[in-house]
Each structure stands twice: as structure tokens, then as C-alpha cells.
Length: 289
Length: 220
Image 1 (tube, each protein chain N blue to C red):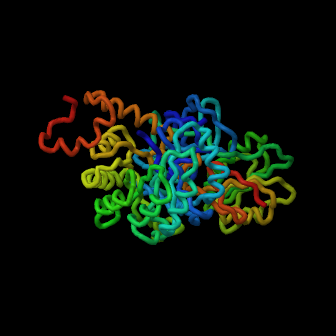
Image 2: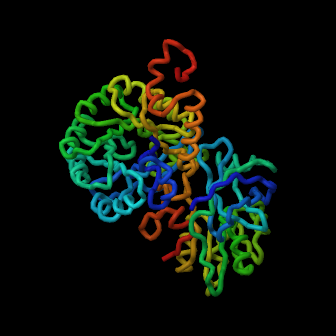
Image 3: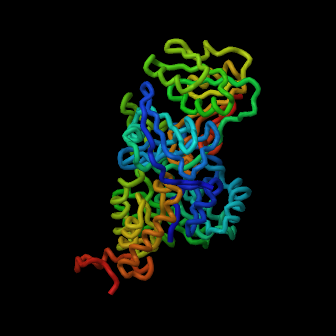
């Protein structure tokens, strides 16, 4: 299963790219419209990039009235990412989305590094959201917490159906000439190749701790990267920064992953999920028996 | 429909302090003046937006100021090297105007040679920070050149339809003396096709995504 990371693709400006995915994840929607961060919003670094978009979005009313119907016309399953400042707001968002047939899942953005953290911990938010909807709920978590597996377990116990791992982590880039922050809001979320080992560790640990379905993301740019996330325990992967660099990345990553699986004699991506957890004793190359 | 292709570098030339990157166009459309391409910079995570400087038969020219890691990496390209290009992207200049005047500042002159050709080589006013930088004015026909501390707005004649590209303070100053001017903006940009919401600039109190709403926007 190949998705985009939330906030890394605009389905209405790039519908052809969306159609190369198995599902489209919206940019995070909040109860009220948000203008987002003051520019500058983007800064490339040596092995990744920082962004501070600040959850720019039209708000739930306009999203439901004018955006979602157009997304549904694309013919690709829609996941809606939601944000809020409290468990009550997440519950409100889920309630608003609950009856909408256009969406197949709700992703709870519990970890945006560019806005203030919501009140309540992940378990409280998931509990509130769970009470408001029967739709599949994915909790999007950050690796920048002391004990991510414990947070993931708490989210699962509270009713999350799956995990999206990981969000960006907060970073800073300085202008080489002025030595002042390059981003308008000073700090931003760090993504791209440098995030991959962090994300892999998160998927690896949360798979072992929870057994929940995991969509892995963080620095995936090739089929080999995608295979590693599956091996660590993901059932699906999402592309973020790689999409910015190349709108054809989904097609290429899928082709490369298929080649990798075929070379190893693995019949399907699902058979690769979690193999990192059993291969440790043998150290032999992973190929199907 | 987005088009991306591996193009070949034909030549890399020095123009004053700037680098002129000439690539074979492949099957890509050159687009209209003011449109841009995302060029993959060697060893960098993100591509860089570059407006088309000229589009002679079979080629695309990009004028680059090597001021950061991405532009420096692009300037290391050599003849024969491949370079991935996505484009043309964004909205270019409107060309249906009566009395065009081109105004450029520094590396902001990049789209003006292509624009000048499309408009029949109209009058131009170009500003640079030094005489070395001003050598790039040779790319724009019929140009009057001013060098810091003289500002382009001091040399702009009245009564023209202004098409401008340059740093934000210059665009703000041009807009103040030439309401209705077409202004080509720039901002750090991750994707170039509307995905990242990174390249917004505040124009008349509104945040606009330059890659899909610009980069050419009309001054109020």
C-alpha cells in the first residue's frame, strides 16, 4: 500500500500524481480555517529539509462543502488527516467526518511540530475520537517522545486501528551568511533521507509493541527504502519529501519495490511485513523459502 | 500534466558573476516567458526552481546565481551531464500589452531575455549591485543599466506597461510607482507543482502559492 504523507501532495493541483497512489491522505484539516505560517516556510538542509507550513487549511466547513466532493471525483480512496487543540476538537472533527462516505480512514495528526501541542495525551485524544466515529482511525505519532512504543500502545488501547509513523521532528537551519533562522517561524519539521533511520526504529519498535497495522514514512525515496519499512513492520508506506523532488516517485518506488520482491522470491508486500523481526537469528539474506 | 525528463547539459558559460546553464530541451515544451523548471541539483535533496532565460532552438537556458548549496551544485554541472527537469511550471507574463517596459534587478533579470524576445526587444531597465554583476545585461537587448546605489525606479520612464522581476524590495518599489505592473516573485520552493505550500508570498495581504498562482502576479 503506497500513500502520500499528509501535507505532501495537493490532489487538486496534481490529480495525475494522486492516481499513482493506493490512497490519498489530505493535508491536515482543523475546525477553523488556518492561514498557516508566515514565510519563509521551506529550507533545504544537507540531508533533508525543514518545513513550517503551519497547518494551512480551509477549515472543516469548506473542506466538507467544496474540497471533499472534488477529491472523491479522483477515484482514489481518501484518508482525511485531522488536527485540533483538545480531545474535544478531535472528537468534533471525527463526528463531522463520520457520515461522509467519501473517506475510508481518518488520520489523527497528534504530532505536528509547527503548532502548539494539543491538550491531552495521545490516549485521551484517541479515546475521544473513537467515541465519535466508527471509521478506521490511524494515530500519526512523532518519534520525538521519550517512549514512543508506550504512546503507540496507549493509542491502540484507546481504540486506534493503526499507526502512521512518523511525523517530522523539530529542527533549525541558519542562513550561512547572516547566521539567523532561515524559516519565518524559526524552527520547522525535519524530513527527508536523514529521518529514515529514526522512522525505521519507530516502526520496528511499535510493530513489536503493538502489532497494529503501521503506515511507515520518513525519508522513503526508493523501493529499497520501502522494503526496509515493510521489513521493520509496516503494512504500507507513504512518500513525503521524495514527492517534492519528483512527482513520478510513487510509480518509480512501486516499480523498484516490485523488482526487489521478485528478486527475493517474495510473493507480495504483505509477506515482507515484519521479516526484520525474525531474520535476526539466521543473518541469512531474506528470500522466500 | 506534469512533464519530467533527464536533459543533457550542452554548455556552462560564465556571464559576469552569473552562470548560464544551457541544456538540450529533449521533448519538453519551453513554456512561456516567466514560467520555470525545477532542476535537480547534484547531491541535493530538493530541486531548484529556475525560470527560462532563453529558449533557442532545441535548448533551454537558465541563468544561475551560485549563492547557496543548490545553486552551487547546479553550477558544478558540466557538458554532457544529465539534469532532471520538471516543467514548464507556473504562470508566465501576459504578453498582450501595448507599451512593454522590462525591469530587472540582479539575478531577477533571468527571465527577461526570453521575455524580451517574445515582445520584440522592448526597452528595459536593469539594476545591479556592481559592474561585474552588470555584465549580465548583455543578455537583454535595449537595456539601460543602473548600478547600486542608483535604483531601477529612478530610471523607469512613465507611461509603460511594466513587467518586472527582482528581489522583493525592488518589486515593492516598482509596484508603488507602476500600479498594475506584472511582477515575477521568488521564494524557497520544495516541489514547484503545488504540493508543499512552501512557496507562499504575501501579496496585498494574501498568501499566494507562487508555483501555481504565480510566479508572475499583478500588482494591485
